[in-house]
Image 1 (spheres, one colour):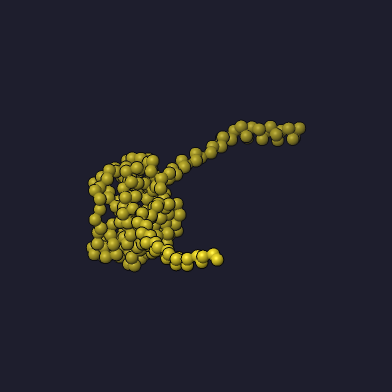
Image 2: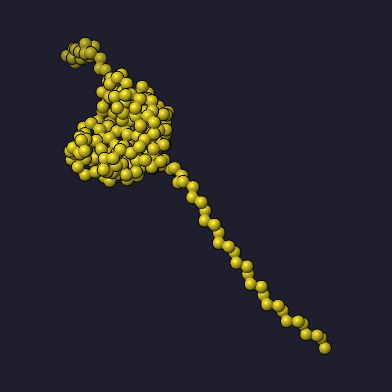
Amino acid sequence: MIAIAVLALSLVAAQAAPPTTTAPSPAPKPVPNGPVVVLETSLGTVKIGLHKDKAPVSVDNFLQYVRAKHYDGTIFHRVIPSFMIQGGGFDEKLAQKPTRPPIKNEASSGLRNSRGTVAMARTSDPNSATAQFFISVKDNHNLDFGVAGAGYAVFGEVLEGMDVVDKIAAVPTGTKNGKQDVPVTAVVIKTARELGAKPAAVAAPKPAPVKAAPKPPPKPPAKPQS
């Protein structure tokens, strides 16, 4: 009887307990389905996958600069710990490189400014982005479309080398040429290359002229038979 009473009390307690609920899983981040670009920097390699389907204008724009080797020799000129690293527009002397015309803002694509994402930098004009980009070192959802007005257009994701991004974000910075948050020692993008892209065609060297083989000496006349 005691065992039955204990069992009954257990059933009542189980029925009285509120049902357990499982927290909804966060939506998975979209996987980049476009080309991959490799940045070789003075502090290491960063591999970036591009969201060709979500941000086609931004991706095409970025690739045009990559293919033109625009980013070679540029620096990360604005570095703010626990925020982002920005580059692609200035050389080591902080001279700004010429750019193509600005592009339209694609921040409404649904891609969020999360840790490891790559987005277009711009001025207060939403449609002013050209060559500069930034990589978020934390979730910066305050930069998303609808939160920060027009928002900042995400077009890529760091696939490998986030440790390098963190290393860049931690470098000492100061003021130089009137610009704040400039690394004391320049962090240089040595090269930016599209992974798997074919190198520019190089004209094949002309074959050397073939020398004519020397003619064999004439055979001596046959001796008459006796």
